[in-house]
Image (cartoon, one colour):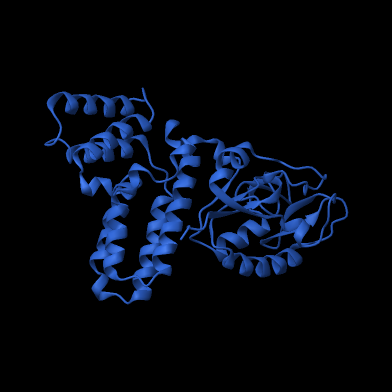
Length: 316
């Protein structure tokens, strides 16, 4: 049976839909040209869908009485309650859309994830979050969410896509008739990935799995899923990747000849010092893993956490 495509929610203007306040769009090339062929997008425009229409008066966030209100800039009409009511209903529907991630429009009073301008009492401050974005993050706390502006950073882009595909695998695991043994296999396959994000969390997740027999299924699922996604949300660093590469090379040192061992060590060091991108030592490791059939490493998601056609690790 063909597996359903990875589905990602997205601010509709980023796909080229003319739903902006001025009737325009903000088509994003990475989303539409690079990522698009590998996923299925679920476009959402909160302002249009709640009934504001296009074109429309611009909106802004105003701090008032300890809270934030979303009002029109010229006429001062407050749309906060309407947006919150619409968002609650829309998010209930999105729960059924099998989303594995979400990309929001930066700076938007409805969709901005962080540093949205707020007004009131003095100079504007970049300390707000869009009304819909806030509801989304509270309603689906484990879902990978990013802004399109941050996706121009190669490290953040690779991190987001890694989380999207990891979240899909996690959801598929817990949607099945899973057992503690299945969770152990899942965890084992993600060990190198987790280690590249946090040694501490890697150990903590191992402890959760080790206590599987002492936790209810609901507790095990809750605790593991929350820490798993929280760990992957911490961007991997060059130093942590280097540690993982050395760890994997350690599994190969008794299998490869001296020249190959020296070559791999040199390749990893070239990555550590920034001379080559991550894909270079990874390609060499994958070659040796296939050649020597190292089953533990063959099963590591770290070697290919997302479609290679995206070439994300060519730039980190």
